[in-house]
Length: 346
Ligand SMILES: NC(=O)c1ccc[n+]([C@@H]2O[C@H](COP(=O)([O-])OP(=O)(O)OC[C@H]3O[C@@H](n4cnc5c(N)ncnc54)[C@H](OP(=O)(O)O)[C@@H]3O)[C@@H](O)[C@H]2O)c1
Image (cartoon, rainbow, N blue to C red; front, top):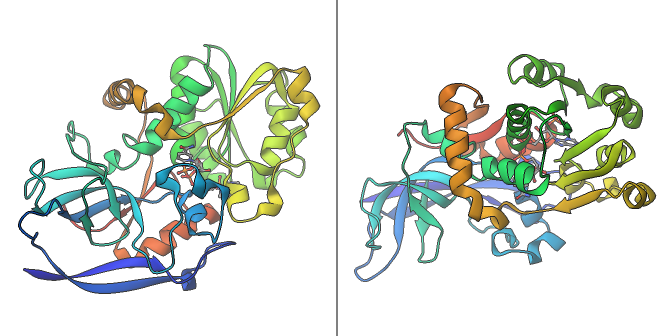
C-alpha cells in the first residue's frame, strides 16, 4: 500500500524569531512496506512533542549543536525528528510488529521511516492517555523531575522560584516542589496562567513577569527571606534578578534559556560577586544525563497522577499543517502546559 505522507521542514536556517513563512509543508509518496532484510520500522505518527530546543537546531550555528547527538543542526529541507508516540505499520525489525504502540524519536510528519539505531521502544500506556507519554511521562517530565530532585537537591520547607511556570517543564517542577513541602512561587506571561498556577496547581503564589517593571524588586516582594532554589527555564533578565535574590548556598538549575534562544542580546550577565560570596551553585543539565532516574520518575509521577496529587497540564493542537504555529507559539507564550500536536486518531 502507498500513502501520501505530509511532513514539515524548514526552508532556511532560522536565526531569530521563528515565523510561519520559514516552514514548508511537503508531500511524498510513501510505500508502507519494508524491503526484505531491512531493519527499517515505518510508523504512523499519533502525537508529537513540540519543544523549544529545536530552534537551536534550526540555527545556522549554535554551540548547542556540538553538545550531544540529539541537538545536532537541522539543515533546511531535512526531516525534523522529535519525541512522540506512534503505531507501527510495517517493520523489518524483529523487536516490533505491525500495530505495536511505540514511543521514541519520530518526525514532524504523518509517517516516520525509522532506520536502525533510532531510539524507539514499545509503549506500555499504564492506563494513561497516549499524550501523557509524549510530555508528562516523557522527556519533559523527566527534565522536570531530574532537574528538581537531582540538580537542585531540594529540602522540605525550602523556598523555590520557577520561571515559565505554566509551561511543560515548569508546571511539573512546581507541583513536585509542593509535594515535597516547599514554598513555591512561579512566574508566567498572562493573568490566566497566573490564576491557574495558584488555583489549579497549588502554587503558593505566582506573578505575571510582563507586568513587572523591576524584576529584582518583584522577586524581593515574593521572597522577602530570599530564594533557596531557582529553576530557570528562561535565562536573561530573570536569571539576573534571581541571582540577586538567592540565599547563601542557593542552587540554580539551568534547564533552559528560552528568552535567549531567539535573541542573543538577551544573554544574562548575573552578578558574579553574589555567586561567589553567597556560594550559589548554578548548574546547567540535559535530560539525557539522568536516564538513570527514569524508573523512579515514572513510578513517582504515575503515583501522583493516579492519586490526584499532581495534575496533567496539556495543550493539544491537531494536524500536521499546524506544527509550525504550535512551535512558534512556544516563543510567544501561547501554550499552557505541554504542547503536543495530534497527527492521527489512535
Ligand atoms: N535541559 C533539558 O534537558 C531540557 C528539557 C526540556 C526543556 N528544556 C528547556 O526548558 C524550558 C521550558 O521548556 P518547555 O518544553 O517546558 O516549554 P514551555 O515552558 O512549555 O513553553 C515555553 C514557555 O516559555 C515562555 N517564554 C517564551 N518566550 C519567553 C521569553 N522571551 N521570556 C520568558 N519566557 C518566555 C512562555 O511562557 P510565558 O507565558 O510564561 O512567557 C512559553 O509558554 C525551555 O528553555 C527548554 O529549552 C530543557
